[in-house]
Amino acid sequence: MAARCAKQLSVCAGSLRFLAPKGARNNRFTSQLLVRCLSTDSDIKYDRLVVEPIKSPKPKPDVNSLVFGAEFADHMLSVEWTAENGWSEPKITPYQNLSLAPSCSTLHYALECFEGMKAFRGDDNKIRLFRPMENMRRLNRSADRACLPGFDGEEFLKCLRHLVHIEKEWVPYSNKCSLYIRPTLIGTQPTLGVNKSSSALLYVILSPVGPYFKTGTFSPVALLADPSFVRAWPGGCGDCKLGGNYGPTILAQRHAEMQGLQQVLWLFGEERQITEVGTMNIFMFWINENGEKELITPPLNGLILPGVTRKSLLELAKSWGEFKVTEREFTMDDLIRASNENRVKEIFGAGTACVVCPVNRILYEGQNILIPTMENLEVTKRFYHELTAIQYGRTPSSWTEIVD
Ligand SMILES: *Cc1c(COP(=O)(O)O)cnc(C)c1O
Image (tube, rainbow, N blue to C red; front, side):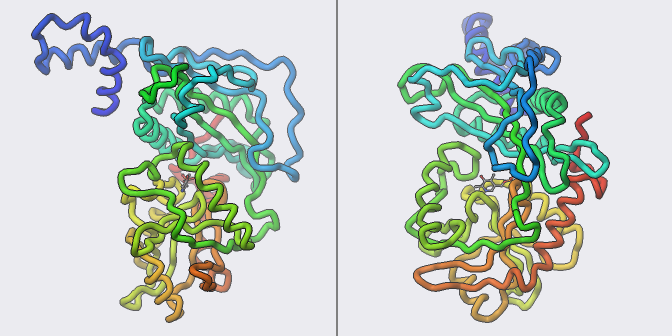
């Protein structure tokens, strides 16, 4: 709340200077102004939503041949922001190209952040979102890091739900598929100075997606662990979903593919801490140094993207109460030692795209470390089944919200 107030205050800084008599800088005065600022129309408001419907809807794609992020629903949601006037009315319009100045800040300095979330059509034909406020909060955190404007997540979520409601026929009729939701926030200031953007655009596009595992069963991935590539570092922004974090990872991904591997295992530092896999959080189920069964994942130490799936899996595993669940750092040395002693049971990535993705091999300094995830699969499979049962409404849960 404090951060949001501060943001509101900066939005209103112009009027504040106007209203404040000289010397009146005490707290009581500013807090009165703050209330005044908050009650203006400068934040996103669902009740100002304007809908401009499409004239003729596109045919929906065949659910059996969906390619990730290739087709988009008929409508998009957009909200413009300026430092002067704050957020304008949210608009749902036909999906269309943007008009941006060639000089605009998102194109030059990657002033951009985004979210990845999904809507699921359940066996009961109801459409559900999974913990959507987590994404709203994370987008606000990312926006802060990029000096882009914050917004009222609850009000914006209402607009987003309205978009999904309008496009509900784009949520595939399949309990293997879903509608991917991509909220995006860009700086639009049309000048080249490396500065905070004085204007921005927040928009949402929707894309139907097929199953992550095409064959219908888990297919494991092999990873390249090459310490010469670094994804995130202390004081950096790897813990925010900023577009600028992802472009530079494509070369590392290409290196992995050239060696016949599917993804990159991201390491950090001299001690080669294991941080993430591709664009997923990493988990290891193992027998720890004390001979106990334990599920581990790196803590949110600034190098790790705080995944909604990560958080959910940690909460699920704790609720089972069958083994230790620990957020702790672990290194390639820890992994190699445990692997040599047959204490590694399962390693998997976790994220919205796949829920969980098993790892069967890691190539590190010319050596193959074989991971017996597929031979065990106990925890990986249980996570997959329990989380998808919640998402598709087979298990009732406070984590899902129905879109009417
Ligand atoms: C988005 C993302 C994740 C997973 O987050 P979810 O909220 O679970 O989808 C993990 N790591 C990185 C680097 C990501 O960008």
